[in-house]
Image (cartoon, rainbow, N blue to C red; front, side):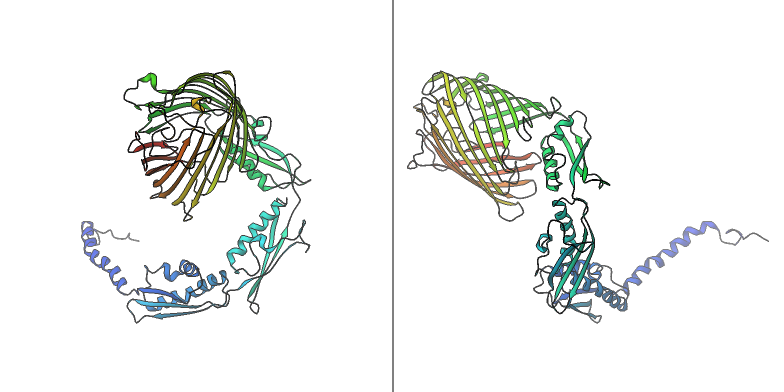
Amino acid sequence: MMPPPTARQAGFPIRFLPLLVLLALPVLLTQPKAARAQETPYTVELTGLDGTGDVRGLLEEVSRLVALRDQPPPSPIGLRRRAEADRDRLAAALRSEGYFAAVLDIDVDTGASPATVTVRVRPGQRYTIGTVSVRTTSGEVLPGGAIAPGDVGLPPGSPARGAAVMDAEDRLRARLAAEGYAYARVLDRRVLVDHARQAMDIDFTVLPGPLVQFGEVSVSGLDTVGGIAVRRRLPWKRGDRYDPALMDKAQESLTELGVFNSVRLALGPEPAQGTEAPVNVVVREQDMRFIGFGFDYSTSEGFGANAYWGHRNLLGGAERLRVGAEISGIARDANLNPTDYDYNLNVLYREPDFLSRGQSLSLSGEILSERPDAYRRDAVVLSAIVERPLTDSLTGSLGVTFEQSRVEDGLRETTNTLVGVPAAVTWDRSNDLLNPTSGFRLSALVTPYVVPFGDSDNFTVSRLTGSTYWDLTGSGDYVAAGRLSYGSIFGSTLAGVPADKRFYAGGGGSIRGYGYQEVGPKAPDGDPLGGKSLIEASVELRIKVTDSIGIVPFVDAGNVYDETFPDFGEELRWGAGIGARYYTGIGPIRVDFAVPLNKQEGDSSFQFYVSIGQAF
């Protein structure tokens, strides 16, 4: 048998192939145009959906007619087929929203250009939830009592939505888990639609499984952190009834230690014997050493900077050590030299779960030199503070401070040994520590000071501060914020209180528009004297322009008084301005410009502040 001839043997030279392809291209390229000429473009209109809420959006989402508008069918017959194929999808979507008696009419007008597809919906009465029952496989009521329909999100009379029925299974499992049935399963769900009553009845069959207790705890992922630091954070003991809320609380508590990048807790497999279930804790440690720095600026105080080094796990039990240095007052006054700047060397040691779970001990020491306009102070300060959560949002603290100081002001120079007993309570219901958009904060601080050696009298400093936040739109883009602070000093004359312990107002964290400590009583030379009582108020509107940029118009007011209680007949100092915020992962960078509205002689015409964090 002869082999097939080659292209050359057949009389067709291979070199002519490219020419043949070029000649064929116009024909190939014209084919799509011809096909497109036969397409049937169309529009879609949904009618009859007034009063059905967001059902229109759901129908548009499931409709192939809507999704494929940019890909029209090749003929009017294809368009009609596409429309009819949509009928079942649209009807199913209506049933999922409780419209079980809905009627659909689909009209295709191919005489129009483009063609028109009109979907007329007669939704009818929306069906509601009728009866809801939850029983075990044996037909008995659940252990611990029946579960009310509202507990699983299906209150009688509510819309019979398919999504709500599906969500009810998750709610049912969560409710059973909260009762201690950690391995409960929903075996069956029967739905009966009663068209006469226009209601949906639902029957759940569950297998609750055993009533579970917390069992042995295993911890994995530890390297430098000791296992005891993890176990003492668990809010249960072996043999306690299982509660998923305690698992969530344990995860949050372990995260708050600050030594883990991730924390995950999970129950082990259902025990084959007994009712104790093992708990697996999986953690991932983060870098234990850290460094950082910060800065601030105001026209009255000049530049300030700080730097610090720290260790998150000093002794293996999540003990934190932080050593820092600060300098401020740079360029505060053209006549100042470096010996007139403010300096601070500080060290802080914090031990979590001191003597009791959740209770912490903080030990700190400072060596400082301060040179604001109001006074000159050199001091060594040591303190020990025990802090304890009283509820989920209420925290209390009690401590002792020891201070050796020399303070000079416009009234006198004092050298004192002071012993203070600070006691504080903080109620925090805000939704974010660095940038709250809703909730409130309330704090009260009272510190009695005893002066066993020195020139000053015994005295007590008290201060109450509250702030609140309103999310005006629910998106966090428009937040109204307000702050009110009141302070009072008891037990001594103004001269008998060291100058650094008196109240001052004015500056970036106080009454903006005025210089630092410039509001209140002043000496004949114009330097601030401070006072024995204080009142401050601020109102802001925090507006987000983009996800990272915001503007903040604000008004501040307040004053300082030389008596124990404010003299409300004396005029308040008012300031107003506008600020910019750049939102970062560590909090907003704040730039504020403010002017005094009723300045006194010697006050500047404006103030400018740069720092990190919201004003309050």
